Length: 253
Image (tube, rainbow, N blue to C red):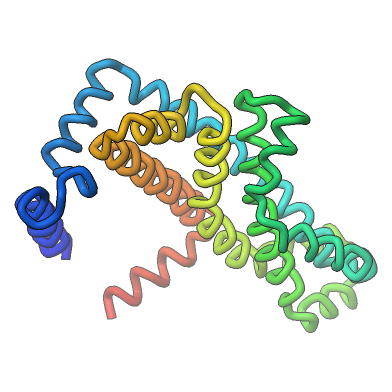
């Protein structure tokens, strides 16, 4: 399968290379060779690693903070029905609000530094992880909880033995979904107000009508998203080893 994917990629790149110019103006789609030259220029000057480090830090820290807060809030409201019913309209109101619209407000409160991008990213990630965690906690088998209660288990025992193991699949589903949104939060924050980061590189190339530079920045952003996804999958395999064994059995069958 990997070989077929590589062949498909090569065919697409060759078609793009030869179609740019004769069929489609190069200004609109550039060329793979020009994009490679733009990437090489970013690497040789050292700018690429600097800007990637800034965006990766904003996305990763915002992702961790938003995910931690989302899991904690999801477990809390999932276990306390009264609190969930009380806060439901407020949560729905904030969830329906496009989080990117909060960026100007965060700029007024925090400024245009890295902290603003981290807060914006954390806000975006929070709701995605919270809703998945909340749903997973509410879907825990009530029979299992009742059995533990009959055995004299306290709330911490119920959480550790039943609720968290049952809801962890939902939690990681929310984490996987929120990875690209973490990058969106960081990059949009950089597009709005920044002089560093991949969002700044993207905006700077666009302002100079440098199509190859724009595509180069987009490729780096995709690679960064792939890396963050890989980290989440590694954490999932570590915390959910039975999932990996199930996948191995399915492949064997």
